[in-house]
Amino acid sequence: MVAAKQFEVMLARQILNDAYKPLLHDGVGKNGVSSEIYRDMIVTQLGDAIGKSGAFGIASALHGQLALEQTPKTTDMEK
Image (spheres, rainbow, N blue to C red):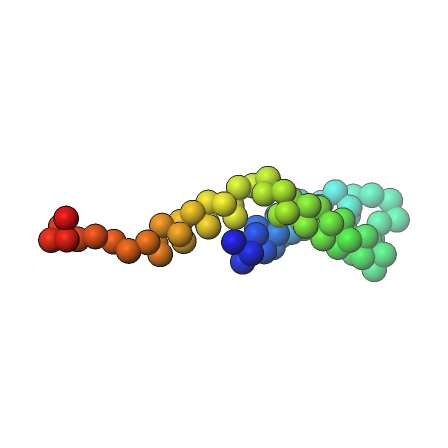
């Protein structure tokens, strides 16, 4: 489950990073290293919060799918 949550955090960060690019580049004086650091800090914190809360539901869905694949499958002959 830990790997699934980390995947959700990583995916949330990527989505937020792409979403924040147009917002921060339109602002006055926001072009430069400081804006990149600021955006990275925002994306990291929001991505962590989204991943820990499971807001997207990706971690639980991925965990459920992997757990389903780990269960032994019965064949018609075993029934």
